[in-house]
Image 1 (cartoon, helix red, strand yellow):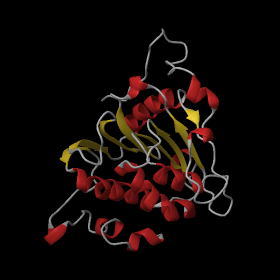
Image 2 (spheres, helix red, strand yellow; image 1 turned 120 degrees about the vertical axis):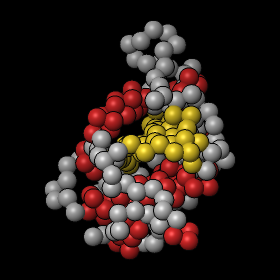
Image 3 (cartoon, helix red, strand yellow; image 1 turned 90 degrees about the horizontal axis):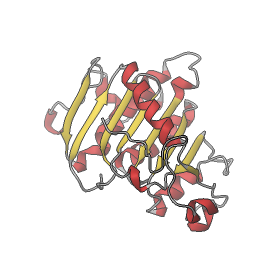
Image 4 (cartoon, one colour; image 1 turned 90 degrees about the vertical axis):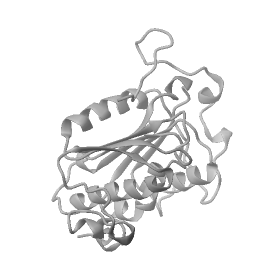
Length: 240
C-alpha cells in the first residue's frame, strides 16, 4: 500500500469496509458495486470526495502495469476552489507517486490562488511537474451543467450544477463504484466539453498568480463557442 493508506479519515477507514465519522457514525462506503446518491452538506463535500479519491488511489497502488486510462482522472468543475478540485489537489503527492494524469476543465478561473497551485505543478515547473492539463471553458451555456469526475475506468462522481457555488450550497451528489458504463457515459460528456476549452498557459514562476494575460487572446476576445459541428448556440451538458 502507498502512504495515503495511513492517513486518518480517508483510506485507513476503508480497511474495515466502511468509513467512520465522528463518534463512530458510519459514512460512505465505496466497496459496494452500486450507485450512491445522497444529499451532502457543503461542509462535508471535500471529505467525502477525498475518501472516494483515496479509494481510487488505493486500488491503483496494487495494480501492476496500470494503463494510461486506468491512471487518468478527468474533472469538470466550477472553479479551482470547488471541493472536488481541492480534494484532488490535496492528494497530489500520492498521485505523483502513482503517475496519475489529470485533465481538468474549469468554467471559472477565480480565485487565482487555487489556480496558481495547479499551474505550479504543470510541466512548466519541472521540479513539481505532474501530468496535468488545465482548460478554461468560456461558455455561459455550461452553467447548468453539473460538476463531474471520472477516476480511472470504473469510478465516477457527479455534483451540483455549476451555476451554484459548491462551497456554500448543500446538494445531491452521486458516486458510481465499479460501474464502467457510468464512467464511459461521463467520459463522453467530458470529451465534448473538453473540446470547447482553451488551454490555460503554464505559470513559469512559482507563486505567480495567473492573470488575464496568461490566457490565449482568443479566449478573451471571441464569443463563447458551441459544440463543433453543431447548430449555432449548441452547448454540451453533463446533466444526469
